[in-house]
Amino acid sequence: MTKWIVLVGCLFASPTFAQMTGDTFNGCDIAPDEFQEVVAPLLSGGWRVTNGPGIVDMMGLKQPLDAESAPETMLIAYNEGSGELHVDGEAFGTLTMYPLDLSGLSAEERSLGDASEVNIDMFEETFDCGFTEMPVVAFDGYRMEQGTRVSFHVRYYVVNPDLMVGNMRMSLDGVSEGQAISMNGYRYLVARANR
Image (cartoon, rainbow, N blue to C red; front, top):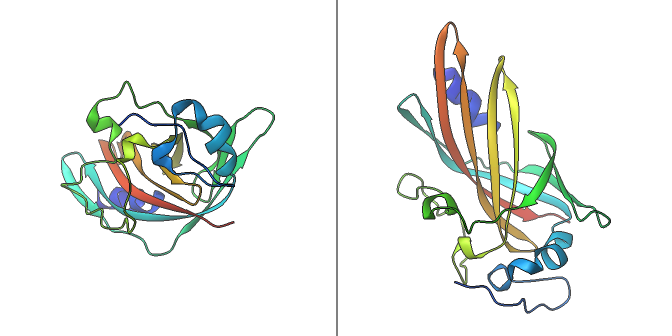
């Protein structure tokens, strides 16, 4: 079981119309219908992603994931013609990134995670509003590890064109050495523009 925890650890208010100057915006001021025109084009480019702390729950056994100091590289590409966003990362390849509507989700599903279990002091900035009031982008994928599928869902809250904070939620169901295993976990993420 320990090897799976180590393996997974390595994987991985009503808005008002935006008041913008040049190529910037404040995520707390973005209206939902402004995402495509204002937010999406400004996400294009290189990003440095730092893996923060997290938790893995392997069949009832909880194991903390330590923050990692070395950032990974992520590239976001905006297609002007289609309006689509694609994300390319070291750990997962190329995937489609999409805006996420949080309005139909519960408070727990909208949040970054359970702050009582994970220290989120990694966020150095202060914010003008709650994360759930900011634009949200997400992508989904999976990796095959030792013949077992590890699925993940990544969500970023867009603070401004140079900063996104979010988390990666992971899940695994499979068989190892003839024994059924299951895992759920999450890790906090901070992405800073590197253009």
